[in-house]
Image (cartoon, rainbow, N blue to C red; front, side, top):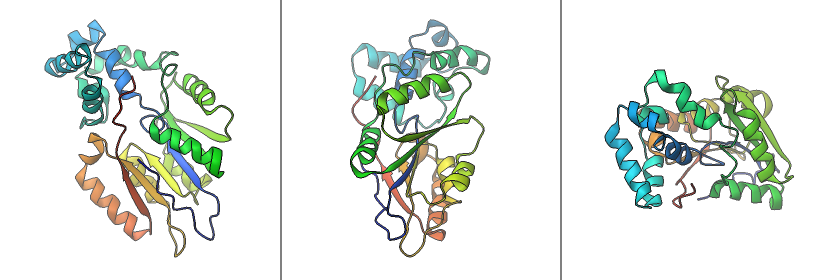
Length: 243
């Protein structure tokens, strides 16, 4: 896994990285899934009992690698859709994530660690940007500050319905690398970036199931990339389970 270092241009001497947090800098879906399938209420109301049973079996057998792979290759972006949790139980579903202890035992992804090294050893400037569900911002920021250990990283916590593209357009239009797990966000940001003869911003895509499943949007993104002079890197998700 690598970040395409498109930073060696004459007019952009410092590597500017803007990265999403959840599922990029740290994986949250595997832990969240494990909590849901261990909740008797969630299991009893799921409209996909066979899916739940299969995932429970993987955990009971200690097959963490396959469990991790199943979560990362799911075609549905939203976990509640993938696990068949009805809308009327969303408050209970969300409570597992909104818990102040959710992030406490998580560690950065391999990509997250690689980005931190770029900041520590190459002087890269990093902005971690995240759309926060109400009640999660404080716990997320606390975890990030602890993990970053004093590294000069800018943390930007946006309301859940705020576009990251708007922030990039206003605050960091000359970034080198943009990384996100949501294809729609990557597409929106790609539309506000512009390359030149010696400067090619890179959009970085992670090969999650819910990303590669959107063929039409991937094709549109590729055309935008060409039209706006951008480069692109497609990265594999971590293969080692971290629950």
